[in-house]
Amino acid sequence: MRRLVALALALSLMCPITLSAQEPGKQKGKPHASQVTVVFSNTQRESARLYFVEQHGRGNCPPGLAKKQNGCLPPGQAKKRYVVGHSLPRGIVLTALPVDLSVRIGPAPSGYRYGMLDGDLVKLAVGSAFVVDAIEGLVR
Image 1 (tube, rainbow, N blue to C red):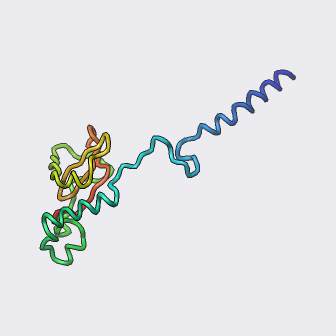
Image 2 (spheres, rainbow, N blue to C red; image 1 turned 45 degrees about the vertical axis):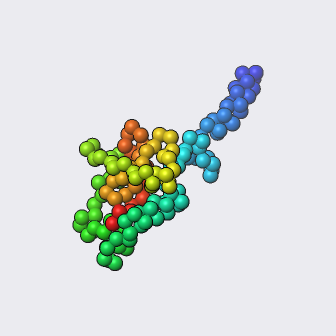
Image 3 (cartoon, rainbow, N blue to C red; image 1 turned 90 degrees about the vertical axis):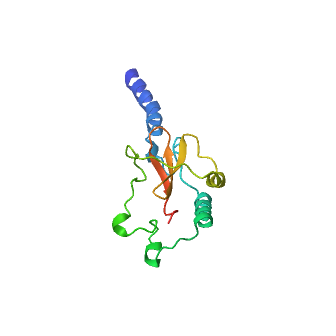
């Protein structure tokens, strides 16, 4: 009888511990402490767009291509060499950001860097070349 009571007590003490040790995604609406979203803010996006309009003007893109936001390229040629959420393929070289633009958008967060690729501003994870976010269609 004492063993049964001791076993029941031990099991009742373990239940709250196992319930609190759920996976991070199963915590109803509470973000996990290590999950950090590192994307361009709306202010950074607008600052980058304004910079390129000031430096390069609105461009001479026909209205049909201008609304596509693909750098004034026809549909068959508008393929990007990168995909957000994937690492850059080997051999692709980023162009450095103009100094004025890097001042406007501020420094990259720790562990990330900025670069220009295919007329887009991209944010990469340092070391893995993982494309975290991009502002597309800046250079037309």
